[in-house]
Image (cartoon, rainbow, N blue to C red; front, side):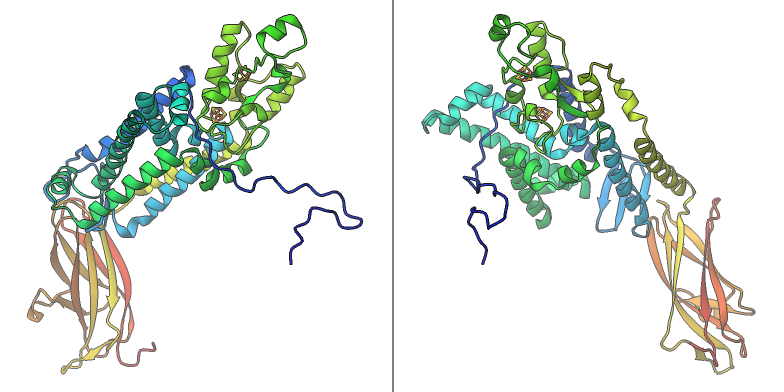
Length: 492
Ligand code: SF4
Ligand code: SF4
C-alpha cells in the first residue's frame, strides 16, 4: 500500500507537501486585441494558410481527356494522388514518404532555428483558434467586454449572443470539414451532390466529424490542446538549446517591476517592467512570459507587440520581451552586445538539417524527373509450374501487370528475352498467333492485367529469362522484369 502521508520517514529529508488541488478547472482565456508587426505577420500567415486550404480544391489542371482536371486530388477509388503536374501511383509511395520525412526534418529545422514558430504561426490548431478568437471579438467585443459577459447571469441577451457566436463556430467548422472532402473527389461535382443529398454517406460522416472536432478543438478547448494534448511541444523542448531563438522576457532589465509612478518616486530602484500585464492580456494561451520559458508559450510573439507598445508609451527602449537566445540573454545581462539574430542561424545543427532537408528534396525531384511512366510486374503460376505439351514443348503461365502511367492510351510491346526459341501468346490473342513479342493496348492511366503463356521447345532446361515491355510511342519507355522458366527437373 502506498504511503500517502507527507510526514518524513526517520532519516528522510522533509517532503514537499501535497498540492492543495490535484485538478484545476480551466480559466477561460480572453485575449486582448493588439496590433504590431508580429500580429500583422500572423494575419498574413493566417490568410495564406486558410487561403491555400479553401482554394486549392477549386484549382484546375489540364491532364487531357483521360485524367481528372483537379489540380490536387486524392483519388481513392483509382488509388492515385494528383498534385498539379505530378501523379503518384500506389507503388510510388516512397515519394509521399519522402515528403513526410521532409516535413518532419523541416519542423526540426524550424524549431532549432526559431523555436516554436510552427506552433505560433502555422499550426492548424493555432490558425483556427486565432480565427475563433476573432469571432469572439466580433460578437462579444474585446477582452473586458468578454470577461464581463462571461461573469454576467444568463439573460436573453447573453443567450442570443452565445447562440449567434456558436452558429458562427459551426459555420467555420462546417466549411473546414466541407473543404477537406473536396480534396478526395471532383470539387464542383461533390459540392452539388452533397447539397442534393446524392453524395456518398462517408462524405456526410466526414464533414460531421470534422465540423465537431474543429468546433471542439478550436472553439472550446483552444490552448488546452497545445498544453495538454499535443506531443509536439514536448518534443520541441528537447530540441531547443541555449542557441535557439525564443520569446524571452529580459528579467535583468525588467526587474524589479514597478509602476511608472513608483519608478518616478524612487529613481534607479525599478526595472523597465511597469507591471501593466499587457503581455498577459494579449497572450492567446493566457500565460505570463515573465515567469520564464514554459510549455504554454507557442512563441506567437504577440506579447512582444504589446510590450513594445507599452515601452514606446513610457519612453523606454523596445525589446523588454523579444526573440532572443539564452546565450545572448546572458551576454546582454553582462552588458555585452548581443549577436545579430541571423548569426544564430549559422550553426552546425541548422546547417546539417538544411543540407539533409535539401538533399532529400533534390533526390525526390531527380527521381520524379527520371521516373518511367511504364511499369511491369510479373507473377509466375506455381501450381502447376509448367505443362508438358503433346509435342514435347514446355509451357509456363504468368500474370503480367502493365502500368501505363501516361494520361493517354498506349500500345505496349511485350517481349520474351533470354529464352531460346520461346514464343508467347496471351488471353487476348490466339495460340496460332504465338510469337516472341505481342502488342497489348493499355488504357490511359490504367493497369492492364494480362495472362501470358510462354512456350519453349522440348528439352529447354529450367532457367531465368525476362519479360520486357516497350511503349510503342516516341518515348519508347521500357521496363524489364526477370523471372524463371520452369521445366522438368527444375529444383524449386
Ligand atoms: S507588457 Fe512589458 S511592461 Fe507590461 S507587464 Fe508585460 S513585460 Fe512588463
Ligand atoms: S507568452 Fe507571448 S509568445 Fe508566448 S504564447 Fe503568450 S503571447 Fe505568444
